[in-house]
Length: 313
Ligand code: SF4
Image (cartoon, rainbow, N blue to C red; front, side):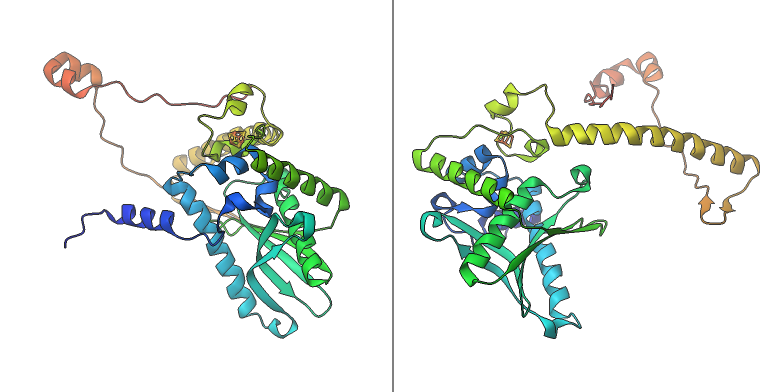
């Protein structure tokens, strides 16, 4: 039978249908649920999440990063010094039995273990630091792992931008305070799940990627005040804008000189500059079209889609 499903529809359906390996998430609190907005975590457990292709790709990027780390460990010349397991599940004990973590990598050295949490990013991290949610997650991982194995366990968050190869390695120093905060959040979420009471949302820059953003009352209510991370991005953008303007002037000056001197490839001490000319695009004069071919103009001219510009004041 001929299959008329377009290729990417097929792929998207397959990705959506794939088993996450996380089981029924409404029956436990996962380490990754704790740091993010608790309302989002809560909703994701009880409401069917309708992920778009972009969101599905974000999940896949995580698996790709994990594959890269595993390949590196597997083929490391130092591999005799350690062993490792991937996607290891640790479950809390006694009153914490509702807590679970699926550790990306559990690396075992003779005297200690390392709980490695892999992350991918596409835009620079706020202040170049690991997100607090990652620290909570890694603390729960270190704690559950060492409770279960009885071994000393330290943490590492390995974040990578798969497009640019930019990477950060954040060694996580264990903090009783952070662990306590993470445990408190875990309890809060678990109680909300038990009583089926939606927790209050926590607005952050990540709301932009939240599947519930269009109907989230917390986000709509807090529409005007920017969350801390976005505020930090705005400050950074303002600083970079100055450099952007300076770069534009420098670019114009160099271009003007090379044009005047008829230089196509300028050789500098550290860098070279190449003048690249491209043919102009064909353009249509709306005025002429309207004046000379009004019937055609009526048919082909329509209202363009408006654009959104960000102005920093
Ligand atoms: S939009 Fe923001 S505040 Fe609302 S549920 Fe999503 S992450 Fe939480």
